[in-house]
Length: 416
Image (cartoon, rainbow, N blue to C red):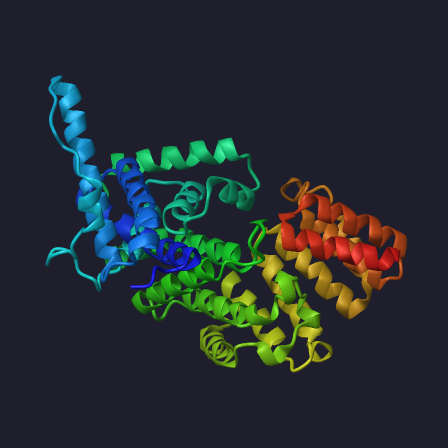
């Protein structure tokens, strides 16, 4: 057997991690210990699979190794409490030859959806539920989650730790909610999935512009929720939004991972099948009687995707949709995008005036996106020197290397 590449092993482990954590939690019910055991199993797999190849049932292999780690830890704790020494270790050879799971571990069972819903339990605040799920299900680091929430990393670490303790103290059953229990968790669930997708589609830190496997996991989980709640318009709206946005993924990067903005993308590379599915979903979901933010964002994405060329984009329709969206949500990013749409319809000075109103919003303080949008509108308005300054400021503020390079390039092009 030819050993798999490091990238292939890493991708597989990232995909399996939430499923394995869910399966171990279903058995052991100790969030901290389960997460530690799964991390050890992932590390063992990363070492061994690169040398000996991926086992026939990698998910079952990881579950068995993590379960053994949990058993070892329980025995060790009992030994300390009784002040006795108990032999509870397993050899590396055991791990290397871990067999496929027996009847108690179904290959078809997807525990990641159950894990998602457990993390969004009513015992947690919405913010804590989202942070915990991004960590446990999405596989984001604490630093990435802190960046998404715009809070210090230490604050986010404490929030996640408290959330784990609350889940354990709640005694929540590891199962899908009954029909009447869904609505209490749905808002947090959808926000979590939205944030996971966004981090996958536009990675906030590091050398990569996007993490396709993370966006794909968010889409997969949203499909699972949609199957449970096929008549919920916001669930359908979120799934449509993800599909319509992810459809552009192949056109967003050029040679060496260079960022390509929407207006300059080769639309022939867009995934027309995903666009067709997304448009059909949002067309069925939109209703004047009950309209939510995900439906409106999906409608905006559909307008972009249905334009054959950037110049064909119906910006007036997009501006009207952002007006509706701004009326029902207090989100500074919505107001930022509203300013862009206003500039495209009424001219850059109108958009710049709307941006000025966002300068005092503390949620955007130090965020590169505000400076980047201002730079773009100043460039449109012919204010070259001011645009250069804003592009450079945005490049300094972003933690994404591809975005930094793109913004610095825009500044250099104007300065040259």
